[in-house]
Length: 227
Image (tube, rainbow, N blue to C red; front, side, top):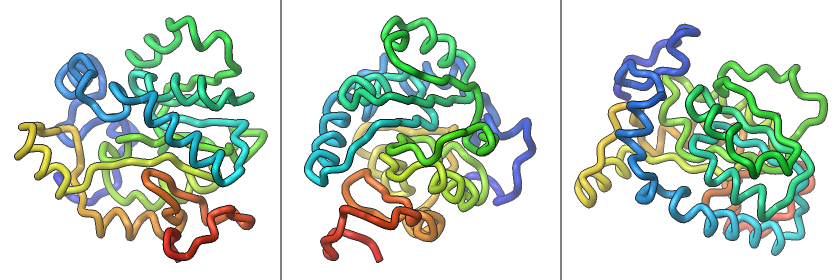
């Protein structure tokens, strides 16, 4: 961890490990043009991959929730390929919220956009749960402290979570290979992440988690499914 494992105040919820908000400097320093960031330059491939898995398992996705949509590129491609009847998109960055709302493509879909964090998201806001598919791409490394409450909340909101997060070893590799460092991130090991994820989700594929509340799982092959 980059900081002591303490409970953040409400004001700190949308701040990185360096104490800075996820606004202009963050998007400039970390994303730049966006052409080198996973799930941005290749967002279409990610969406196609997710669609192919759900098609293969004969799982219908009629609703999508994105927990930290950022530049909205992966959200856009996911919505285009799944064509869900209901979409939720949240992000703590006012800049990204304004940019998303200015995009013409969202007008064709039933999208609720909220300027909030996962931690602050109130479950009483929802009338129909769970969403079929959630997206949480490179988000939780920016959340301070114990992530169990986050995963506990998410596993009640979505059946499946398209999830990615860089671990400590990933950051070491990226620094060595592409000279990339992220001062906003709270760095954790794979073991730390799995300890917080496993009570609420099981891994069923690359980047894909299944809520343990799903009773009729289509993912039945033991070799590729967590206990």
